[in-house]
Image (cartoon, one colour):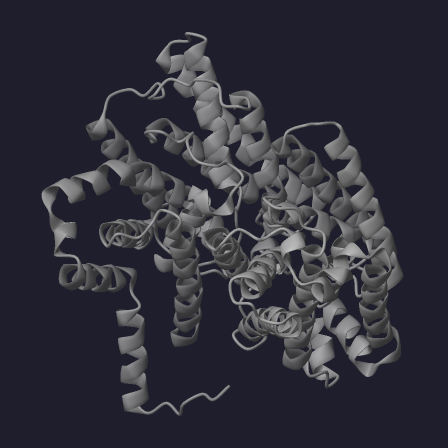
Length: 316
Length: 268
């Protein structure tokens, strides 16, 4: 590890590095690249397509951001989304009215998050191990409810309103998450716990309670994302590449939330991260990449995000 | 047998306090690559085996460097290599049936004696490494308390990188054995094997910063999980339900190990 002597030039370089790694700068860079390579990306129809897709991804990533700022992680959120969607689809088949279905989907999401949090706190196991196992549990439950082979689900899940509602709900969730993070005592506690768990505990914070709250909110967000998703139930549940959770993870990390916890933002950070991931995916699609490349692209983005997180950590 | 090899590698990584989520995908990618080299490329078996082993060790080296040098969390690093390799294995050509492969290559998998010999050899080497060599001491010290190990002069980065390389290498050996038993069109061992591997390594006593774990216990763990897998498959349940049960059992095993460990050791 060679640390440069604190020369003015070195300092300027460090400042430049933090700026160029800022999520918004990364997003601008991505868009500039797309402008050169794929000018068609900026056609109104494609932008509109992106806006329709981005709502659920934003909500899912906002919930994950909150978990990760407390230095936790949740790999199961993609499966929670499927489970909530499967419940919603089943209820819709039974002829339940949409407000009741939506309430059930949100409830399922929150309950999943609460169960995960309880397991993490009680068993004192690493969050990634618990949430990795819970991924298979929730996905398995979702398939039980959906049935194999798939039961004929209604094309669109019970969703109130259309695109405008989806976008306004997503933006409202983002705003609420950011305000909770930066303007409330709870947000301060979350950042304290993520920054230094031992010190936060010494200061009297209850780590299990904050964990419960954050995973509960993340589960609720997954439920909301399920409500907003157009067709969340297609695709192979058990294949890793098809997991929206991975996309959310990459987006949150690219959005500047530290893997080590304690620092990060929903707006502009995660917002920029989600837009970046979506832009790259759409750009690859326009370039004629086959859908099978999707998982590869996603994992490369995740690897890139890890590298950027490492640079940010060092620049700080 | 492949499960034992994968679980041994996993146990080594878990002893260092990390985890290797990529091992089963390394195996899948090696199966696809090796099969392609021998059928489409007409490469001799020795070249294909060497390439598979090199690919496994190379992936392990990349994982190890990212973990040891950059200080990134092992589960995320290996999650990335897992998804990349699983994607490669899926987009690649389907693996041929073992009948299409050269005989001197498939013998490792088709003949029980050869497969068992390979597994005993690999297990024996790892056992000696763990129990009789300084490196084994280093590894246990590192997994138990990294700061103390570094202070005591353990080359932490080298040991961490080393266990990942070994894990990748063992996964490639598992792929060689698997190739000999493949039927055409059979699904690849991918993330689906992941829970078995972690579960077997957990029963092997490795993991969760225990500093414990022995090769013969991993063998027992692999036997337990292989039995479990056979029993669950025999129920005729869908894969998703089997995975659900296995995931719950992995959690229960981890929790039981943790509880047992808390009873005898201090809590860091």
